Image (tube, rainbow, N blue to C red; front, side):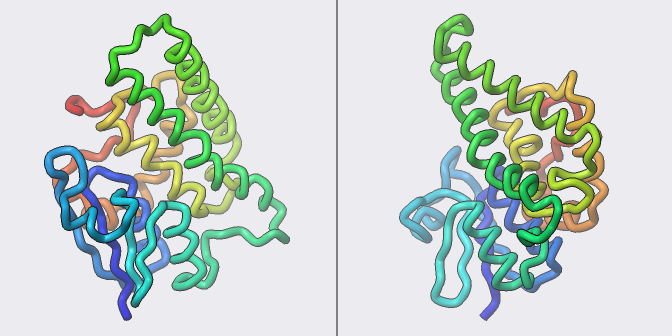
Length: 219
């Protein structure tokens, strides 16, 4: 049975498409346009969570980015892109793998939510969120100062997880990467990966990729 990846345009399900290309595994890609902002009814009907990503493998229907990536890597990729506990960089890998959706993504989403509500920049919630936002980017920029990838010299699923927040997510929350030169150089390395290029052409053929300092001109 072929693995099916259901991709909602301009969403974090691009991570799954990229992973499949990195692992060079067979998969069927089904894409869905937003209607107009949220997922269309046929996408919501796939899983009770009603959010991207969603994959199907035989009788299994699975959601959640981390679960989908981990399942594919171990079920179809022989454990590739996951570092074993015996690897010297295992603690770093483990931290950044969980940091992306455990800390980074929620911080960006909270910032987007508060901004949509026109919360005052001087308010307590916005002050706390902005502080966390800066700390997250400072930590990431420092990590990438002497490391090619998040786990060190090896590309892993931690990188697959974090890149969406630094790129496509900026269509939802436009922010600049000015002052974070190590992050920008990191995105340049990502852009050079053949698997990333192939994945984005398949899942977002009409979207301008956001891989530089400036956010997209249009949200």
